[in-house]
Image (cartoon, rainbow, N blue to C red):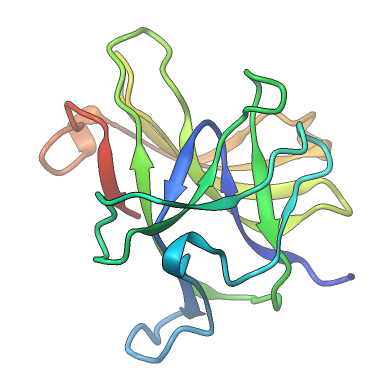
Length: 179
């Protein structure tokens, strides 16, 4: 598989009711790639990222899903119990795209809380990806970063938003959020 992988779910108990990708600037067109987890079953073939703990996205039922269908995708770090989980679906590679997803993010009052997010442009062969991550802990933060073997797996932050920059401020409780 030589093409870059398009979409992935990343880190610590992520629950996803659906994810959609369409060419950039064409939001009104039908989705090119979609996984809606109808009845708790993924439609795409998901694979564990080879450099992490081999956790893989699985389907589940969550009645609180914001889309009316209780089927969701769940990825947690249960295999090794602590580091990170990353799963990706084999799809077409896109140069430019629009991505929509609902993420169930966790809120914590601790100094360092869970990191929830979504990864995209996954390249498991060259060990690199981009990720949008949410950490709603004592210091709430959203970030967009590149992570790869060439950066020694440390995120290279491309953009960052602290609580004051978030419309309505950071959430006070764990719940679904559109990204």
